[in-house]
Amino acid sequence: MTKGHVLVTGGAGFIGSHLVDYLLGRGFEVTVLDCLLDQVHGDAEKDAQGWPVYLNKKAKRIKGNILDDGVFEASLTGITHLAHLAASVGVGQSMTNIVEYTRNNTMAAAVILEVLSRMPLDADGNHPIKRMVVASSMSIYGEGEYEIEGTGDSTAPELRSHEQLAERSWELFTGDGAKLIPIPTTEKKLLQPASIYAVNKRDHEEMFLSVGRALNIPTSALRLFNAYGSRQALSNPYTGVAAIFISRLLNDQPPMVFEDGEQKRDFVHVMDVANAFATILESDKRVWDVFNVGSGKSITVNDIARTLARLLQKNIAPDILQKYRVGDIRHCFADISKIRDVFGVTPQRDFEEGMAELIEWVKTAKKPVDKTAVSMAELSSSKLMV
Image 1 (tube, helix red, strand yellow):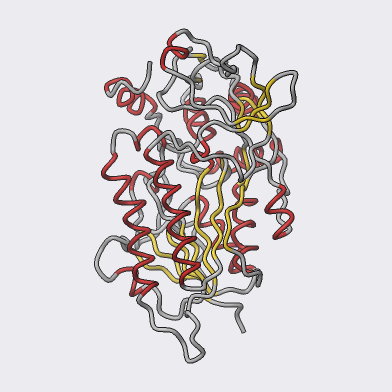
Image 2 (image 1 turned 120 degrees about the horizontal axis):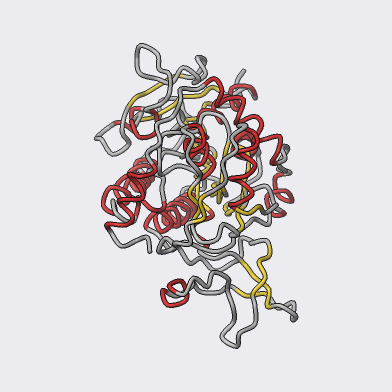
């Protein structure tokens, strides 16, 4: 007997496909709903039906777009759990493709939730969907949390001004000139989304949590930090920074680093992300809340570039651009104590181990096409890179 039947939207993608593996391994039935967007799946080796060959063969598959009439309704037959990961992903691209991102992200979430709100209840008055988990993003925070140097007082600063960034002054300070020291960011921090993608993700979690409460479906929104690992779309210039850097290095080009490269981020392995989703879907806790999913550790973008060059055996130093992208933040890394305390979820892979797994997979993958110039030209032409 199975534990339930999970619909994973975006289940053929980077994170979704790993989640499918975890769910099947834990005794769930799984159906994947994915539109197989070429920007995401262009590099992947595919079967005769166009599905990535890495997608677990035990999963049922539906190719379709949530925004098309009847597609989502038709995918719900027998479903007891929902993991919504399908989305257009890319902070920079979201600032030029605003309508597309809002349609694919916010409107798709609205379609899902309206369909769920109209589903008939069972004989006991319960909704047929027993639990939902939705992918949110650390980008909704804007800047992370900081302490004022020498005081121990925490603060949530505004984004850096155009004037400050034009002077190539990258760190943050109080109005009195005291330096701000980055500290782990908790879920209680004020949300300050600085891109359309971030606004979309804030919409995602608020929409799912509000409708989940109304329908009495336990719902969690996972604020994912920088996920990396096998099955990333290496030729997608709007994907994660690790994949973009790998694409450059494999084409014997230096990773292009904004600002001075000393900005701190939190990199979490995709299998730890998949485990978080699967653990919450498997839980019987009745929770409506948001949770950080990260490693709980910080690393600079420069260190990412150097580590990848070393693991790929490329003697190529990063190109420090001393340029900035409008809306970029300086530092943000996760406090992961909440998801640990509520669901017992902790990351199992350290950075070196996780990056080694990624590199081993890269050796078997199709050599990526370096499309960084395309994204850089879009940013420059739209005045989003200075």
